[in-house]
Length: 282
Image (cartoon, rainbow, N blue to C red; front, side, top):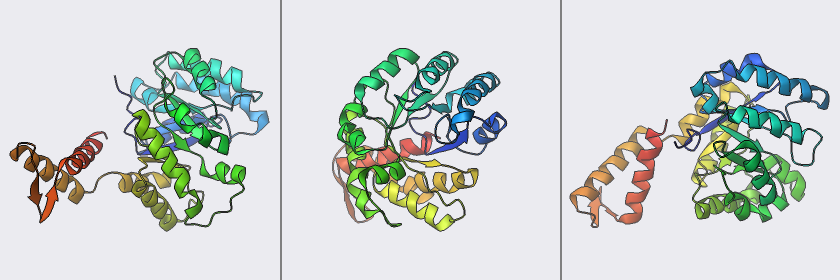
């Protein structure tokens, strides 16, 4: 069965140390929820938070479990091995996926896939120049569902100092989009907007991501979810156009035709089909 997270537009982080927030996050409208064992926790919280995650996960129903991912600590960290062992247990209970931060190696992804079993999708988080260099190998690894972009960590690793437009990251984002396409993955997931009070910046960031070929965005606060969903989901007018394209294409028996004064050929039809499929994915 295809993962419900393949067509998700919004992914909301929640600290693993706050199990009382898991169900609230899942009810926020976010298509996916990422329980975070990494950046959201201090080193002293991580072991206890992992135990809290395991206990709280058992209280979720099957649909909620399938919409939940866990971001573990990076390979080579003190907590990585025990995180993987815990996620392996959760995978057999229907966990929706595992997010690997600082993904740089297809070999690491292969070990994770073997550890968690074939039913658990993987989401590599590209956060470094080394991760960008390996992006095609990561995208082509077994069980990878989508790529995600950790643009803040990437800027630090690359020595960049981007302004709000983040023009310097355009080729990096395009590389993730193209690698995803070559590997036959769903469109990648863009990074967070850190200012939770700036609705204009959030909408601008999400719109830029969608124009650039991304299919989703990471969120750090429930108030960001609705705007992200609205930006990535087709508008009523876009959906109406797509349906008319498909109807016209069928009437033309697959040939070229004109709609609203514009030529419609196979690439346009494929765009229309993707638009309709995206609207039906949620």
